[in-house]
Amino acid sequence: MVRLMDIQEAVQQVSEAMASVLDIDVIISDADFHIVGDTKKHFKRDVTEVKDTYVIGQVIKTGILQVVSGKDDCEPCLSCMQQASCNLQAMICVPIHHAGTRIGAIGLIAITSASHDKLLENQCNMIEFAERMADLIVSKLREKEAALHLTVAKNQLTSIMNSIDEGIAATDESGSIVYLNSILEDMLGAPNRALIGRTVTDVLDVPCVAALIADGVEFNNVELRAHHAKSEVHALMSGRRVNLENKNAGAIFALKKMEDVYQVINKLTGSPVSTSFDQIIGDSAVMRQLKDTALRVATGSSSILITGESGTGKEVFARAIHYASPRSKSPFIAINCAAMPESLIESELFGYEEGTFTGGIRGGRPGKFQLAHGGTIFLDEIGDMPLHLQPKLLRVLQEKSIEKLGGHKSLAVDVRLIAATNKDLEAMVERGEFREDLFYRINVIPLRIPPLRERPKDTSLLLSNFLDQYSAKLNKKIKGFTADAERALLSYPWRGNVRELANVVEYAINMEPSAYITTNSLPFRVLGKREALTPAKPPPTWRSTEQQMIRSLCDELGTSVAAKRQIAEELGVSLATLYRKLKDMPADAAYGRFRGNTSIGYPQAAWPPR
Image (cartoon, rainbow, N blue to C red):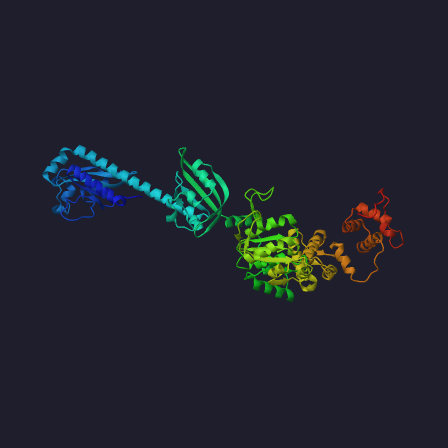
């Protein structure tokens, strides 16, 4: 709460004005008995405080108006220790109230016989005048409080404007800048004092800004590129008009840095999963060495080429390198060159300007290199990148800048490239299918991920890891593998590597009814690959191959209805189709028992089988 002492200058001016008009001495005290206004004629010495025993002190304490006709008739004066040094002849004292609280008092003091008579003869008018002056002081107090509230509100608003991550500018009705926050100062590269008072169209020289100031045409998320002495502004800008009582009172402009916009896009569209090297399963000597090397090179900015068969985890390694690097807080953008149509890959990588081609997004679109600014871009299957785009990629890597399709300006980008492929790029270079200069540019640090068959020790670790992972995911209590199932899994060559292994474990957990994975729950290809390791005479026809497959499964699983259902699942056919195939098989002594009762009205199966 504001006190009288906070407006002491105004109170002193009131006391001097009253003394001048009335030709009477004036004293004004606050509720803490501090003298705030004083014409200093009634005391023979300087006094800065009053006492509660003084007349004015009694009024402050009681809130009751007092009129003193002389010292001899005033009880406080008779007991006052300062009586000898006081010139008081008569006195009128009124309290000052504000918001239901007593905040002080005003005293009118006569120090001569002439002023004594004047004061007492006109005491009603004097009291009314003193009360009006008290109201004036209270109004000054309210003004101070209102100004203080406005200052607090302004400081709060300024703090809010400086704390948000957008540049804010406010103008008056003529378009002159009256406020801008620190974010916009940094974006424009100019101090506040150099921008306040300037016309906003001089600072942000784009048609939509002029249209808002002149005609009130509001706009939203318009891309702005502006060059200033020390900086280049690239932002999305919105503008709103400010109306006061249906009249133009100015405008507000908000600018979002494009790099911040890209980060928001990445958070919404990118994968939030961070990967560390500790999460990569593998304890073989070759994998330990590979992880050590990758961790060592993660701190740099050189391009990395990761090679390896499909399913070995190239993207997992790329993510681990990114999140172990100084760029970990910036985006990780992955794009598969093989999955992208050749006609679209250039616009995906480098972006395009508005109007470049039919069907393009209004305002254009940023490319993956722009979105990855400050972070890492991962180009998977780079061996499938079209040959005509490779020079443009090489230029981006060398010059650290891109040019959008349909654009004429180079945009600086700071990205680290990690590429991956399962192809032999050196052989492709020799055949003229991949540029030699680009190969050496991306192959600064080569990392080869070995296939599973070269590190059998890791297969056991991965089996255990995926067993726990998919058991929890599928809400099944699988404890492990039987010896036969584990032997089959460890002897399988895993051409699809970790991806195929995960697929097989998930399939087996879905199929297994017991607490341990058996060979009955493994896909047939795993069992077939194991048996294929021993030499066998190739089957002459597809029909005989299928029949041999059915016989093998019947030998292993039995002849019950449940076993036949499982055989049908392994073959990917219905139970009815299996019965038809059993009926078509030769009814020899060895296998006739498997046919069972197939005469249940099913039509003859079509051939070749589906």
